[in-house]
Image 1 (cartoon, rainbow, N blue to C red):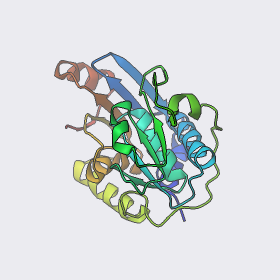
Image 2: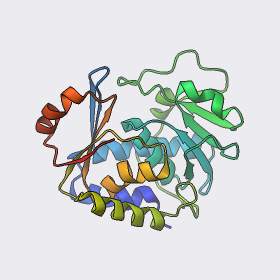
Image 3: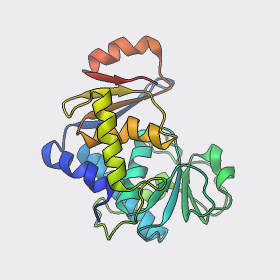
Length: 236
């Protein structure tokens, strides 16, 4: 069974592996990170290897992802799907692993394994983590940047299959007028299935490039549209 990550990334890696795929801004700090498809795939592979080898999550396992729209969140999601896991976007006590920001650790007390992400632009670890919580930034670097999938469960995201999500993503891209040649500016959240489909999966499904902005500054929009050669927008 094809994983959602393979369905999204394989065509991009074949057609434009080195071009910008996700560019992330934080207007509150001035941070900017740009990832090519190859770099994004490497981060996803490291995450998938960590999920499988360090936490023992098998295809079909449930992984809670409580993260904002961010380039590291994209790597986590793609890594979880590559490992064949089903991603759930809430604090599911039946999940085998949760990947969360430090401010949401209290929501996943009942999850067996927890990894926290600082989302720091320079990859700094989370300070003063409670015992038993893994620091994502520290541990993910120890894993290989190539991944060989071993299967996938029936569902990829909150009960939806890969086929369901790809169909929804293609419909969303068509509705928004996004094609594979577009450079898409977005400040949308990824906290629900529909938001994640519209804001990330649809963009990747057609081979477009995403410029994702956290804490958007309205005054920066005009110059960013010009500097990043934006051709389509998904406003929050």
